[in-house]
Image 1 (cartoon, rainbow, N blue to C red):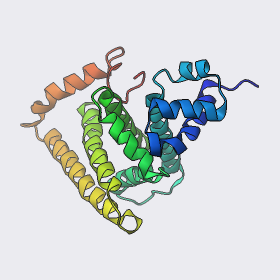
Image 2: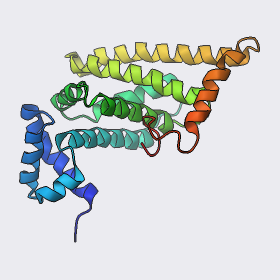
Image 3: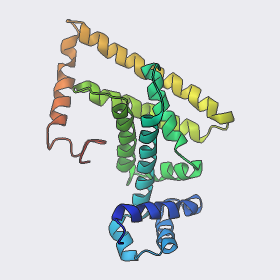
Image 4: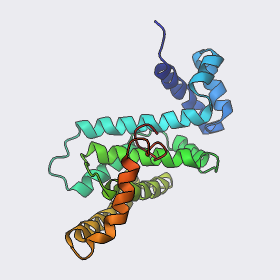
Length: 227
């Protein structure tokens, strides 16, 4: 039976992991992965036109999927919402088997040529967390929740990469402090919405958010359907 593109890409990612620690998410890693699984090089290139970069993106998205699956099976009943968000970020980091693979990806997506890809991946992760936790916001809240969590997630990943504490306890404490900042911001917005004198200040941002959400207007927005 012929394999699907997704199946081959998954095999390429798995094969690439043992090479990433030495060569990063590079063309050398992509070539080695192609040889390791014995796939036709032309077919592999059709699946991953940018070679190692596309494999790095696929690896990140695989981690997102693992996080979503865990959020769907863990019992979060009774937890404060801020703790549920923290759990989502923690589950995402715990989906990683090798820090060096993430470190190499962070280096790759820090390059100007791929910074846009990295930003979309982070946004997609945070969008997945909010969505999995049942966020149904329709106005500017949809955008700001993901923007603030993206900042928290990025900072936490960098902290985690250098954390050598037992069980990454220092990272989880760092995360909890950052999540507190997010929730304070959400409380501020809620207070503004309730205040008839301040609420008009959100009219502009809400209009922008509505325009971004219209069909055909979100194609370049990170994390949105079709991006």
